[in-house]
Image (tube, rainbow, N blue to C red; front, side):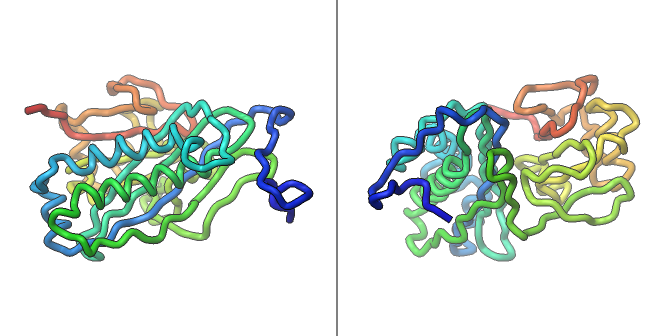
Length: 264
């Protein structure tokens, strides 16, 4: 296979994508930062001296994705339609898992943007925590999946939990689509701890009604842990836009549930 960023003379070359057709492209990357258990607990408790560590790292990752072309010399400037950066604190293993998803409709892909988002989010976590732990280690930064483009889809052979219609455990990675029309569900902040899950997927054909209320009912019917979603204080967003129980769901929507956001 020829390296596209080298010309016939072996010199660095920016690829001309002008003749490619625009397609929907999406990439998901992940990584982690390993730290001492005490540091991880301080992060989890919001007790680190620099303040809200995860919120700062999320913003840094999103900003980095948007400016990837300024950091990687031969990357194109892309008009990203969506960037999301998520964290999962793993006390058992002593690390924070970081994942990023980038999406656009364009002529070239977003793998580098997703990888850059994860890298900078991890570096920001290090910066925010280094006052109490300089032995932290960033590792396992990798591309998990990509969709779209002339070279086709790619998916790393890794797995993560999924909710199926029968309530049995299946396998799916963040950003992966169901074999049938589905929605992806995220649980954020302390809601993630309460339900014991961070990312799930469920087929639209398993919902009594194709709206948020139907999704809540289907999840609660499969596992009583999800009854917390009926709490009127629990908020919901579809594709990062606030939504209520009557909001309609369509194939590949991303639905996030999270507790009320408070200031002060």
